[in-house]
Amino acid sequence: MIYTLTLNPSVDYIVNVEDVILGKLNRTKSEAKFPGGKGINVSRLLSSMGVNSIATGFLGGFTGTYVKDYLNKEGIETAFVEVEEDTRINIKLKSTDETEINGQGPTITEENLNRLKHQIRQLTSEDVLVLAGSIPSKLPGTIYEELVQVCHETGTAFVVDAEGSILKRVLHFRPFLIKPNHHELGQFFGKEIASCEEALHYGKKLVELGAKNVIVSLADKGAVFVNEKVALTATVPKGELKSSVGAGDSMVAAFLAKSINSGDLKEAFRYSVASGSATAFSIGLGTPEKIDELLPQVQLTEAL
Ligand SMILES: Nc1ncnc2c1ncn2[C@@H]1O[C@H](COP(=O)(O)OP(=O)(O)OP(=O)(O)O)[C@@H](O)[C@H]1O
Ligand SMILES: O=P(O)(O)OC[C@@]1(O)O[C@H](CO)[C@@H](O)[C@@H]1O
Image (cartoon, rainbow, N blue to C red):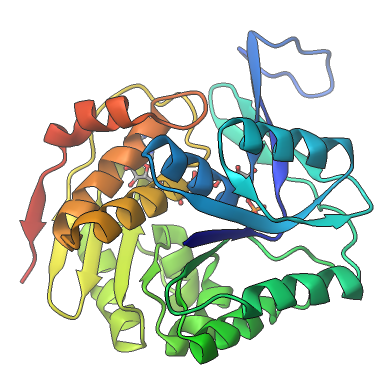
C-alpha cells in the first residue's frame, strides 16, 4: 500500500483577484477551496488514476473535518492523528503573479507525535511511504530523518518531496524518489540553478549521495530525470498557467503510479511531467484525461 504523510495539511483557499491593491478592499473574480498539503495532493492524484493510498498526518478542528470528509468522499482512506487545534488555511492568491500565504498549523503534542511514529513503525517492505511538505515549526526539525530511519529498518520504500535542508538529512537512507524544484536543488548545493544542464549536473550528485531516482522540475523551463542508469531532459507542454499549486505533487503521484504499474521509469517520468503541467493548467489538480492530452508534448532527450 502507498501511504502519504502530510505533517501540516491545509484547506487551500484559491482566490483570483484581477489587480490586487494592498491596503484596499479587493474583491475576488473567482474562488475555490480544496484539501491541501503535499502528501494529500499526492493521494488525490493517485486516486484519480485508480491507485489506492492511505493519507496520514495530523488533522484538527473544522478545517480538519473538511479535509477528511472531502478525501473520504473521493474514496481515499485516511488514518490521520487528530489534534486539538484547527488545521491551517493556506491562501493562494492568483493575480498578475501567484502569491501564497501558508499558515503555521496547529500545535502537535508529544502524544500526537508518538501516535504517528507508532503508525509508521507498522509499515512493511510491501509499503511505500511518501513524505511530502514542510515540517511544522512545532515539530522537531529532525522528524523526517527519524521516520525515514524507521522505514530503513522496516524495509519500507520511501519518497521525499521537501526543501533542500531536509533532503540533505535523508539522502543516505536511499529514497526511491526525490523531486526538488530547481530552487530547492540550488538551496541544497548553495548555487543558483537556472537550466536543465545545471539541474542534470547537480541531480547526478544527488544520485551519488544516495537517491535512487531524482526528478528536478524547472516549472515551464523543463524537467530532468537522473538515476544510476539514465539521465534525461524533458520538454514541458505549453498552455495557460491557471494555478501551479500542487504541480510538483502531481509529478510525484504520476511517477509513482506509472513506475509501480509498469516499472518503466522513463515513461513514468514522461507521464510525471505531463501530470505537473495538467495541474498547472487547471484550478485544482489535473485529471488523467488532461494528462493524456498533454503527453505527446513531453519529449525526452537522453543526456550524455
Ligand atoms: N508555466 C508552466 N507551464 C507548463 N508547465 C508547468 C508550468 N509551471 C509548472 N509546470 C509543470 O509543473 C511541474 C512542476 O512545476 P514546478 O517546477 O513549479 O514544481 P514545484 O515548485 O514543486 O511546484 P509546486 O507549485 O507544486 O510547489 C513542471 O515540471 C511542469 O511540468
Ligand atoms: O507549507 P508546505 O507544507 O511547504 O506546503 C503546503 C502547500 O503549499 O503545498 C501544496 C502544494 O504543493 C498546497 O496544497 C499546500 O498549501
